[in-house]
Length: 112
Length: 417
Image (tube, rainbow over the protein chains, first blue to last red):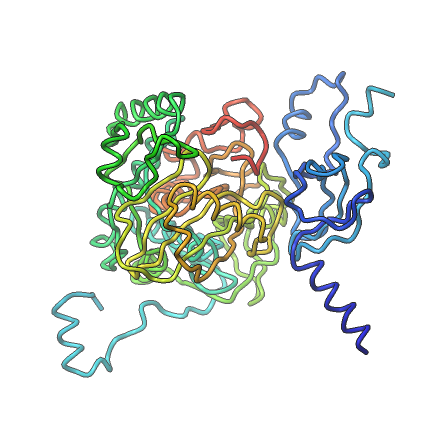
């Protein structure tokens, strides 16, 4: 009972403020991180000359009131770029991974 | 019932038992000529000016909660017109002119207090930028004055003027007509005035989607059933992305949380609106005595209407750097509001690619001061189908054709504006 209560309180504490569990440094205040925005946006290939594709990429957003995939950099820590799954309505974080490990990281289309 | 000294005395003698509700609690009709989604300041002002200036038939404002319960009730109540790009300059000045006559216009005291605003400068470069902004304002007939540090010191003796100050004060750009207004009164005043012109105000009615005939919007699905409409206007800043998303549109907008703060009431000590130039911080004192202030966004996408502690610390640090005595004040409340942050920091009042659907949004954190002008111009758009001359630049195409209005010059990063 006491353990369940502790876990429940722990969950509340984790979801009440934005703290990010950096894979290298552990659970840290978001004050140590810089925000990098929507991680679902796919940068068009450099060879794509369609201005409409580029302006959509630069300016349009899905902006969900729900689960949001986003980049954060641990600027005042190990400086790694993370991809964080966070709910924009509750601030609860459900997953954190290192952005470079994700196959759909930006700018990779032309480099390959 | 008109509000006047005569009526106040008359009601007082009758024991205050005969005051009437300020607006009707309307039930939705089957069809309206124009529906405005969002019962905040902008939606209600739009409905009022639509009924007052145009002849469009039946008008309804539908609101998912209560009137003015969103950003209208969550801002720091500052009104000003110190913009310099494109339509921004004249648009906000038209708003300022409407503010100046608003209490008479609405027969409702919005408690406009033109106490003057100082935007402080802390370097030669900032003085140059302020001079440029001030010259642009003056060229548009707006009052602006560039004043030096000694003039600032005689008006605001409580700031830190020592050479050793972390951010020495070089001077300020002063707008004497700027000030504050009572935010709730703005929503209530517009609601009452619109109601008197026959507008139906429908509260507790959440929009869940749109109905279409071919490419054209024909109404809205709501928690209180379907309501038909000739035209639909969205005025839900903070949630524009969601309401536009229901019609299949993607917007150049991200929703971010901005916090605001008020201290316990203290005796009058701060006679103006003061903006810190070295960090993002702005403060004024309410009529009740509370010091009302705010700073930057928390800086990540959020619809939560509450912020986090690192930003509280950041804002208060900024405040104390500017006004060391602020550290003795006790914080009474702080709260968050959801901002429609556009990718260039300027608003949108425009038709959408969907026929019959219009958008008023993207107010970033400058929406309150714009309320009257926004309503005026959105009403014009809803009635005429094309932009008012003051809002031609506030279109959606500007992002694709390179005519963005980026006052701060930070580029397409929503949380940096």
